[in-house]
Length: 361
Image: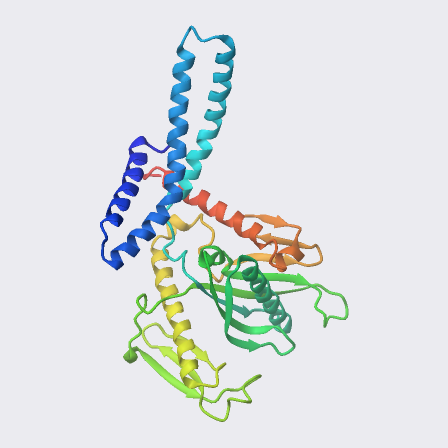
């Protein structure tokens, strides 16, 4: 239950921010204050709603203590009191959710990586299906998706495809997609009608800025070579492809999609920066492993998270035991929000439970 002291602290902080913003601080301070103010607004609105409901409940309780209150007014007050008593726990829950510590990366854009896993050509085709699902989902949410790197499959789909996704709340929602996605269906190339199982791996990384990750020239080895493979014919007369190795971490990124070595280097550094940033976040998360054990969306990309069963028309997310018989709508991106919303709700519940657990439990 949210204490009155906490409520007053939140309301006081908003008033303090408003006061500081009115004093014309320097531009950097003003931006920071504006950001905190906008983040506090939904919290304060919910807190005020809770404060008003509690105050009204007290007024109704005092009214009902009046022995001279006539029967009609008493009945009306009792009904209102009952309605408030039922609604206050829900408002308190909403406030608690809003007060949960935010993932600092939630507001960032994301780097989306989809790779074919086990299953050969069928895995590459499935990777293509997954990527198109995210493309359509990005369109639905008004996000901008830009392909950074592509390695085509031999018969279609992708061996690997990497894209940048920009927009509001991109990482906050897409981070739940990291992991192994499995498909069960009859491949088009299968003559006997047998169901095959194949997989693809999805990685969603928060986009890192230069201020987040400093990459020293002495810490990288840059190799250049001629581009090859589909699409490479027009660029393979010069050493335009770039392979960057980050020596401290051993992370390697290759990029050959652009005709310009300079552009390939810039794209490779962008991916490298995101992977280093993600590795640093993973290290911090590992240190909090016990607290995160019951949570979803931890981003463990070795974890099988979802199965797409085409013969039965169902999608099952194994982290929360959610099954939807809406495979076509999910793969089309239209019903993906239903899965992600359920994952977010479960994650919030797990984090609330962790906060409310006794320290010696």
